[in-house]
Length: 265
Image 1 (tube, rainbow, N blue to C red):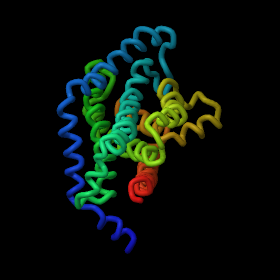
Image 2: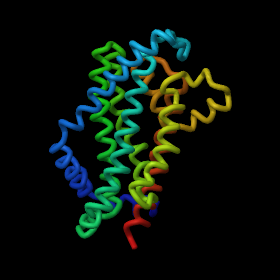
Image 3: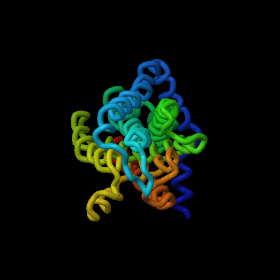
């Protein structure tokens, strides 16, 4: 009880100022940043809809027959959530920490390290929500998501953003140089992108591969996104939500510890 109280006493409303600072910077370049989540789903849907769907045909997912485009559309939302949060708390946060010395300047104020890092992760989650909202509009125009049920993807985007923002910030705390981010991108993000039920149903894999896939946070994010979009999912809703909450909590704590070791000497 005392440890929990001590932990939360390190936070105040000041962390919103860090979040607001990132928002002010983002507003200067928002037009460029909006292009990617706006155009990316169109490119994917046209490519897969015109190209692969004719070769693959319909997909059997959770006992339901779906067109291939309807199958991958929710996965595109989930991967956008992952990429936006992870990139923001790795490359962008590293630039603010190492090159711009923004974190050092903030630590010279009444802000605590916990407030700065938490605000960074919250900002990554916010960017995930914004990207998901834009992509949701595009996918809805294609008729590939149920409404209003599909709007549950927005709070899901925040949870997914917290999960991948936390793991991204953890890597920022232990990565010695910005060039070394190629390792977590290649060894962590790329396998998740390819083998988390994004492009093919996990149920069609061997049993051992299904178990490995279920360890992926992106798998659970994709599953809940498909539930919101199509009304079906292979895993259990509460199992997937619990996994994302646990993953986010564990890596949030690890991120705080890693950044403390890196910034406080």
